[in-house]
Each structure stands twice: as structure tokens, then as C-alpha cells.
Amino acid sequence: MMADKLQEVHRRIEAACAQAARPVESVTLLAVSKTFGPAAVRDAFEAGERRFGENYVQEGIDKIAALGDLRARIEWHLIGPLQSNKTRVVAEQFDWVHSVDRLKIAQRLSEQRPQHLPPLQVCLQVNISGEASKSGLAVAEVIDAACAVAALPRLRLRGLMAIPEPAASFDDQRRPHRALRELLGALQAQGQPVDTLSMGMSADLEAAVAEGATIVRVGTAIFGGRG
Image 1: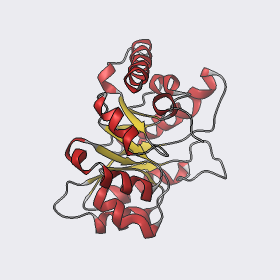
Image 2 (image 1 turned 180 degrees about the vertical axis):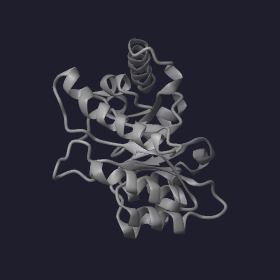
Image 3 (image 1 turned 90 degrees about the vertical axis):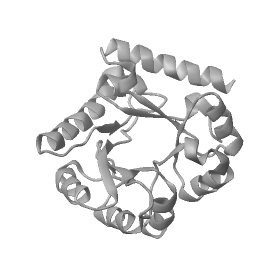
């Protein structure tokens, strides 16, 4: 049952927050619904979930349309790669973008965000593990990029996102999350009003919460495995 799976994820978040001496309300669950259809999202909505993350632009747009009756009550987050030719539809349809990995993307989102909508909430994606195959800004690029993005109209820079490489031990899982937290602290020390760490997934949400995650992106533990 969807409700049981969501309840179990919330239980894990609560336990991780207790272990880290953090209030449970300081961590937001983002249900990652990629490859699962509108019916699965509706089931999760009916079980109490209100925030959904999509990796693929067109799939997300199709779901937003199919669930139009719920639009005012769902917060839609794009968490996957964003190409320049897809920025307009994302600026028009989504509430958050976690995967801003270069200034050009942010500039296009800023220019294309409709005036009647609130500012688009954005995070900079950081390649925190330095993997050649991963998208994201290099750590050394983040401060300059944050200053540039924060100055753009119609966007609100909220913080940082990362997808660390998998690690087996709890301590190894914590290490990249700690590095992202320290990077957010560096931005705050420079006066940036950032407050969001989007990090942690089904396999490592406890390590992410221990290091300060404010949004955990959970798909498999809610919706099941993907084909």
C-alpha cells in the first residue's frame, strides 16, 4: 500500500532527525515519481504527499497536465538534467528546479518565468564527488555561480543539490553530504540567504539528514523499483 510505504519513509526521517537532534519539520520529503504514471502520483497524493520530483522534463509536463485538477495543491520539482531547449516549458510549469548546473540555464529560466507566477525556486547542482559522468558545477565554481544566479530576476536561489556516488558505509555516505553542507555554509557566510540542501535518497537519507539535508528525494522506497 502506498500509504504504508510513505509512512515507513516518514518513520525513517523521524528516526534520523531524532538521532541528529534535529526537529522533524526541518526535513521535507520529496517523492520522486519518475517512470511512474499519474495514477501512482494520485495515490501518493491521496496518502498525504504534496511534493513530487520529476527527472525528465516531458514526462513531468505530461503528469502535470494529467493531474491538472490537483495543480493548486501539488508542488512540482524538476530534479533531472535540463537542456537549454526545454527551459521555457519548465519555467512555465514547475515550482522548483534543483538541477541548475550552469549560468546559461538560470538566465533562460529567469527570462522565461511568467510574470504572473511566483519566482521559480532553484538550487545549484554540485558535482560533489567529482565524477566525470555526473552533471553539476565543480565545487570551485559554486560561489561565483551562486552570486550570478542570485542576482537574476524571477528566480529565488534556495541552495544546493547533489547526487553523491554510492557508498557502502554510513561514514562514507556522510562525507559528500558534509562537503555540500560546508559549501552551503560558505555561501551563507558571504551573505547569500540560502537555506536548502537537497540531498539524500532511498539508500542514504539517514546520512544526508545527519549532515543537514532539508529536502530528501525518495523514489524507490515509495513507488518501488524501476524497470
